Image (cartoon, rainbow, N blue to C red; front, side, top):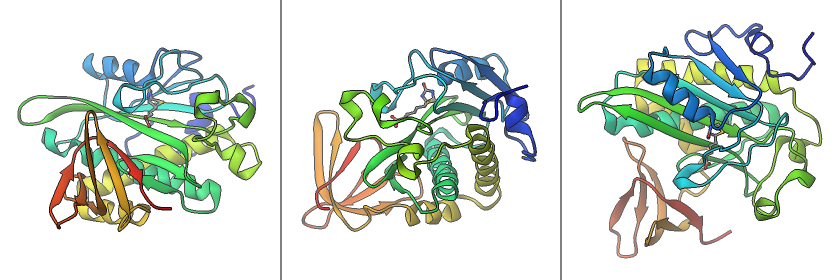
Length: 267
Ligand code: BTN
């Protein structure tokens, strides 16, 4: 008999009714990284929609070579394999699609909309609740597969946060003061990803981009963008058809940002 809040596949799949995602869930008490596992799975012929979940990650990966804090039993660490018929340059659309699915799921559990920080950090009250790391493999013309990795702080108490992220991270428990049913959250997230992926495929990017922008609080605000050893300052204007961030620099030049960290310069 699984405990009420367990993340076992059978519990997540109860009433899932998705078109493609989550028909097969690979569940592990511990993994180095669910993205790493899903990447190898996809390479070895894993199918579209297969999901990998771990209770804990020993080498959870974050964006830009960072690590992702992944203690056992409290949060969600999930990766899903997608095989879209898209050229490699359109891979960022999938990351933004996942950010919309995640933001909408968070909203339904929180009762209020979170903010998306470009490209895909989910923030509440300026603190990070969830992140997405997309990794892909592609030929010249088409993506072979994409792994979308999602980490969400669910039942993480403030006391369990390491010092270095205490000021910048939050969890649903910290925000609502109530424990979340992790299986229910995971089911809703897979359902939401399945729906948004279908919409992207059938109707293209504009609808998803519009929903993404509704969560984008930095639109029209002054930002600094850090791109390795380069920096850029200006006003965040939104995203383009490829999902790149458009920043209007002083003097009016519009610059596309493909990868980097966005830091707000005003409250
Ligand atoms: C970020 O830096 O904001 C992205 C964090 C992504 C973390 C998730 S947890 C599940 C999946 N497996 C990983 O190793 N990373 C992603």
